[in-house]
Image (tube, rainbow, N blue to C red):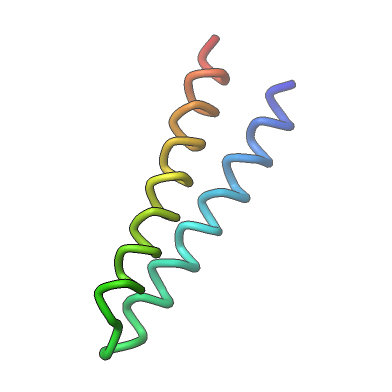
Length: 57
């Protein structure tokens, strides 16, 4: 089970890094785009936190 959790953590970490790379590579993002990326990051961070808690238990 830990292996599946590790794979999921790796996947969501990559997704989060991809979003950060997108945001950092574009200098003319609109407020709506920033909000959308922020919402996506919040979801990813929530999933990562849940996975890490599951891994500890």
